[in-house]
Amino acid sequence: MGQETMGKKDKEKKKKKNRQDKEERKEERKKNNNKGKGLDAMLAYVDENGNLSPTPPDPRKKKEVNLETIQLGATKREPIDPAEKIRHGVVTFFNTAKGYGFITDLQSQESVFVHINQLTEPIQEKDKVSFEIEMSPKGASAVDVKKEVKA
Figure 1 (spheres, helix red, strand yellow):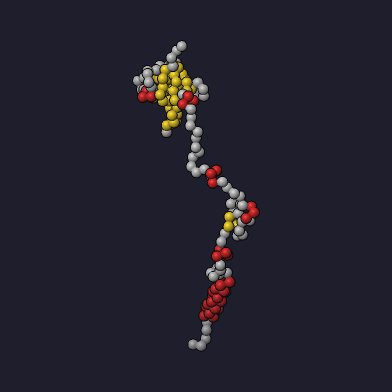
Figure 2 (tube, one colour):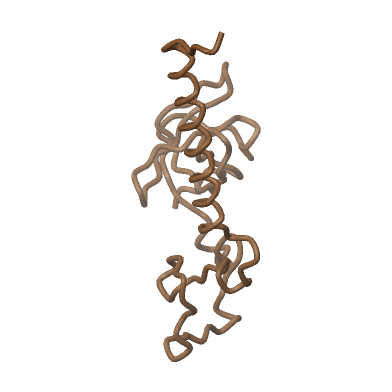
């Protein structure tokens, strides 16, 4: 009964090695422990380029920003002169049965959709018209369409 087999010796050696490894890991954790360090050791700063840095930024490189120049949201548009809103064009296609058509803008040569509800008077193809452009979810459409009086 006093004899140990080779398997028991190996198991004891393995247990002893595991205990030693565990003790070494414990000591390593104690050395690298961040607990108890000051707030300064945990802080990160942002430098003048917006990158994180362990050192505080240089106050001499500080840039003053005028608060009035900061713009939040969409850009403010200048009011458009009502005379500039009115466009001129030629009806290239209009289907009275279906109630829609297209006008070619003389200024930009773009084709603009027009619906029969936006007409002030009946129009036909090749009529010269004046209109305003309104953006819809499907794109530009002509509103307040009027026939131009022939001189």
